[in-house]
Amino acid sequence: MTAIIVSPLSRIAEMAVRHGSREMISLLAKGQDFHRPAVISATRHLLLGLNDITFAGTADLVAPQEAHVEAIVNFARAWDRSAPLLIHCWMGVSRSPAAAVIAALAIEPDQDDAELAARLRQASRYATPNARLIEIGDSVLGRGGRLKSAIAGIGRGADTDGNMPFVLPLAPAGNIACG
Image: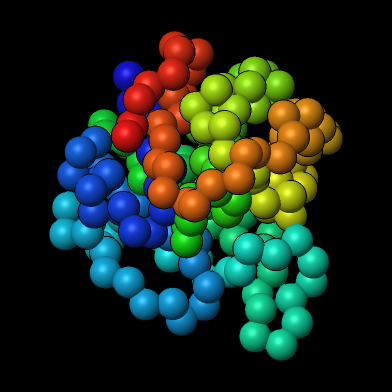
C-alpha cells in the first residue's frame, strides 16, 4: 500500500530514499533555501512559499491561501501512487500534516474525515495541522465543515523538537513506523 510520508526539512533526503519517494511537496517560507533530494523528480516537486501562520500575512509573512491549497489538491490528484508521496515543511508538525490530510482527501474523497483525523493522530502524536490550511482545504474540497471539525477534534499535538517524521496510510491499516 502506498502512503504519504510527512517529514521535517532536516530529514527529507533520508525519508525519500528510505521510502522510495519520487514526488514531493515542500511548504516553506518564501525564499527559504534547501536542496531537493536527487531521488525526487524535479518535474514532480511542488514548492509552495508560505509561513506557518493562521492569520492574514503581514510584512514578509505569507499566510496560506486558496491558491496554495488548490496546488496541493492538483498535485496530489496527479500523483500516480506508485511510490509514497513525501510532504515536508520546516518541522513536519503543522503545514505538512495539514497538506497530507488535504492530499489524502483529494485522491480519496469518499473517506470519513473523522477517521482520517484519527489516523493522523495515530500516525503522529505531535501533528498539529495548520488551522488556516485545514479551513481552506475544507472549503476547496467541499467538505462542509467536516474536515475542520475532525481536525479540531483531535486537538493540538504533543510538544516536539520537530524531528519526528511519520507515515500517513491512505486507508485504515494500522500505524506504520517511520523512525
